Length: 378
Image (tube, rainbow, N blue to C red; front, top):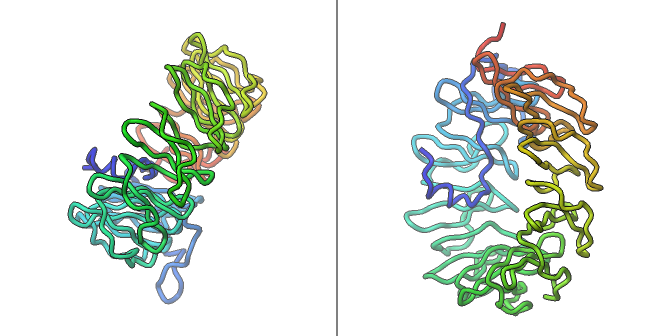
């Protein structure tokens, strides 16, 4: 069982696991050399499958390239994937070979060349060859960002560098990530920003604040949200009931109960007219009115009409949409290119999407062809 503590430990950096069982063809022998070893494949293109109680991996063609043999498995990051065997976690490469043997109670995926692992009630950092980053053991740590990672030791946060030594001694009540050269920290229930030397750039004066995205950070002043730049100057005055970070140069903001989008200067690009709006992803944002959903582009043009019961983000140029009880896929022009026939459907990732139909879970390609299924389909 994956506990709440484990989810917290992963800090939202563990990718989604697709929980299937499967009896599709196993063509893993096709990926083996004459010596019997697996030939390397593009690690990040592999998808997780679940077959008879074990996890394995398929390639974009639906071939089983790493047979199911793990209790839990995650998708690849930085060329390695965390997997669990006999209650212990290790890391495999794209051939299924253990690069780091199973030996840890909990781990995170690699990011920027480093991962975290539990040793007793402490955490350590690992390099991709399995060696420890320094000798430091911390109470809690975040992933590396811009060459440093915030860590907690004895109730205070500081940062370590890529040698595993303290770059900034623990002194903050909370620390998060570096972005655009600035790290968000909390001191006496107020948020501010420091540089990578530990010098204060924006004093801790905000009750609520966020990391920098797109050279802007959202901050809350007197109950309303605005945005500051990397010097601490207020570039978009507080005036929003709610606001989210800039993603793809636009931020969703709410006034009088309706959502719109502004650019980094604060200019309104998409008027306040949606009851619900999500961040832009790949140039498109999900929006909703009267419990129906569609998509807009960055100019606010409705590219997929707001007529669907549910929609999910675009991937590989296609988005899952539900009309009634069945899911299909539309393109960026709003054309239905894979007809609604699925009980469930997920966004495409690396050319494949998870779907459910006829009592079976499966993966499809962007043409709607089933490339792998839980059991043979008639």
